[in-house]
Length: 104
Image 1 (cartoon, helix red, strand yellow):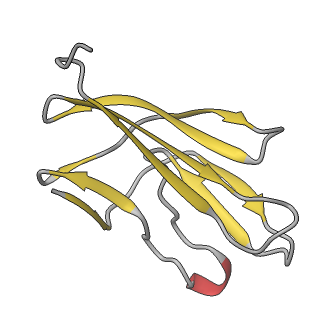
Image 2: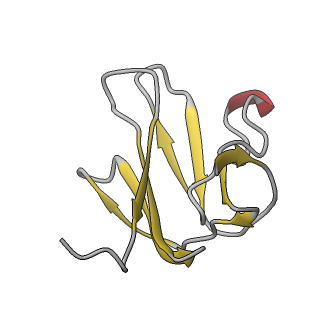
């Protein structure tokens, strides 16, 4: 079961969209605040009641995409990315799930 919900963490990166809206992305790739408390504690990822807490270690796409590193949860390798374009006013969340036990 994959759900999105809320808790707390430490370091963040601030990304702004075309309308100067703040997306403050923390470890685990969740948003803590946004502008005017609009996204307090949003977009936490839980798998089988285990919270994803992958470290936000790098950016991609010329600094527009926060990447939160891999973490093993319930036998899956889990990573997340959050992309905020400079030409639009939205953010895209990408959940990357892989099963290391499946061989093709």
